Image (tube, rainbow, N blue to C red; front, side, top):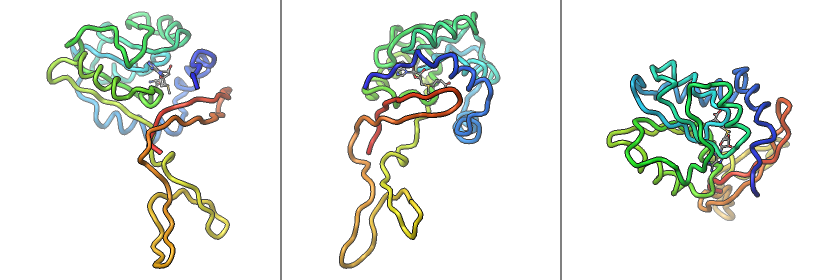
Length: 202
Ligand SMILES: C[S@@+](CC[C@H](N)C(=O)[O-])C[C@H]1O[C@@H](n2cnc3c(N)ncnc32)[C@H](O)[C@@H]1O
């Protein structure tokens, strides 16, 4: 399924600026911040940058907006990003085919975006190509355990399980993380009601 990231770009920006997305606030951003290097005088690429809000976070680690480039597939998101952060360079493009020369960036940052690409191997080799020697790549993905586990009802409660039962006569296997495949999911939150597909082990 081809995702449409344009429709809710404005709503997504409002949601991000509110700082109230629980998974970002309590899980993803604290983890990313804990691993962030000093970004003073670094040339930075933001991969799958959406409407660009991550430039504010990178700035708190010493980065200059003039040294940042953001790339995203969504025209509408990039349009909003350019208006909101005029000092940052924003480009419409695919992270699996980066329109930059080799050895360009000191730091590549990607927040919850690479799992939307059907070609993550190409994304990683493109990042390697555009990074300078000793450059750093910091990225986050949705955790595969959610999608690779299977549901089982036990005593009226639904569990997500991965592994196997240890019954001598008849063991049961739960979950599968051997197959890389497309998943589709309905997201309902804020004013956003959308179906997105992403790529993950199952
Ligand atoms: C969940 S949003 C994350 C946005 C931003 N990184 C953040 O954390 O606020 C995922 C973004 O990845 C972008 N995206 C998906 N596939 C892409 C691709 N192949 N190349 C570039 N951007 C892509 C989408 O347009 C969307 O803006």
